[in-house]
Amino acid sequence: MAAHGAQKLFGAFGGRGMGPTVAGFDRLGLRPAPVMARLAALSELGGGVLTAAGAAHPAGPVALAATMAVASATHRAKGAFAADGGFELPLTNAAAALALAVAGPGRYSLDGLTGRSLPKPLARLVVAGAAASAGACVAMLLRAAPVAPAPAKADAAPDGEPGASTEGPPSGVPPNIASSSGSHREGLGGRSPARQGGAAMRAPARRR
Image 1 (cartoon, rainbow, N blue to C red):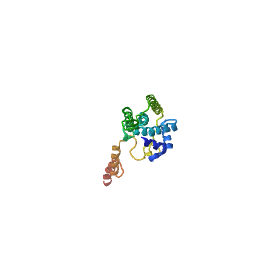
Image 2 (image 1 turned 180 degrees about the vertical axis):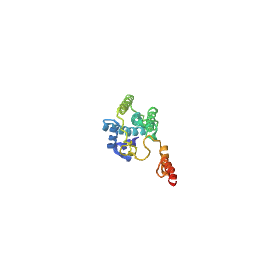
Image 3 (image 1 turned 90 degrees about the horizontal axis):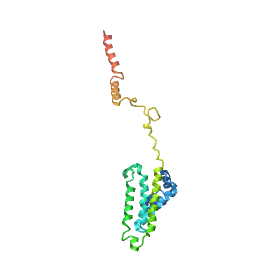
Image 4 (image 1 turned 120 degrees about the vertical axis):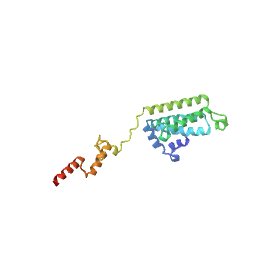
């Protein structure tokens, strides 16, 4: 998670930097976008470093859980699965961060080795602030207008409009009937069966 924060803040690890990140937050409806983008990036970077080091517990996992809760909400329209761009991965990250927050930093963390951690009143304040921030961001996402769908392709335009195909059967004629009548016409030299039959009846009369 720290690497993702560095991608947003500094463009490190192939990231896009703050400019495109701010624009993306603005499109999502998270405003003011510059503030929200930097808050998310700092939460990922700082929360990731604190969680990995096991320092200032539970500030690191709580910051990550709040950020991933908001990220899950941004993917809600695409369903649950990550293969479809859904919220599976950020929700898994949020659950893992909450589990770490409950389990504690461990014996070999900085807090465990030094015997120090955040005072309980400050830890409660961190949890309350993270929950309030995440709730406000999710509320903004739910109020934001949905993204407009992409325009339809030219070959999918309705009949009579630019881009509509002029080939194929007329509207309302089943394709099997249209193809059947077309094959009859080709076999009869372009004439209908009724006209072909009339020509066959007139031919003997000429011989008499």
